[in-house]
Image (cartoon, rainbow, N blue to C red; front, side):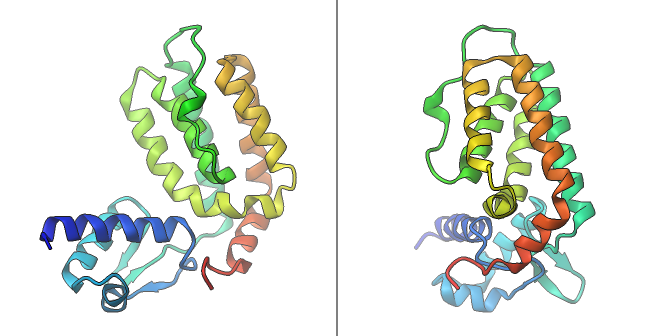
Length: 205
């Protein structure tokens, strides 16, 4: 098998497994063990882990190998507040067209996937390309958290429907207001969401 294809496959599979919560926060990621489960050698696994470290999904500890980053309340609050600030900037820099966002670009899967796609729609409307790149990266770092948010925020489905309606209709003032409400709720519930993340069994366990 082409080594480049192997490295790309390993990276994509590992990233998907991290996003789908197959590992607990703080869990050690052993390259040799992962290589055996991925039918790959250790080298592309290490390369993939280094790339994932650059994306903020894995951390490398001197002398301690690779780990999934732990998460605490202050760090999660920071991520929510950063997401709110990024989306506000993207809205402010968006092209002032009356054409609504396309529902074709919104995923039909989990709440986490649909939220990620909605936020990318907002970011891609910005005239500054760095906004969508930053939102894309932050979406990945928040994906596992968004998978457990409905355990804490019981009306997440209704909240999502309201956000989708505002975003797909292109109603900017309503979008801005709902996005502020969305992130403030999560900042207030950050401690409970972190507890839910650690309590939840990893996918497939």
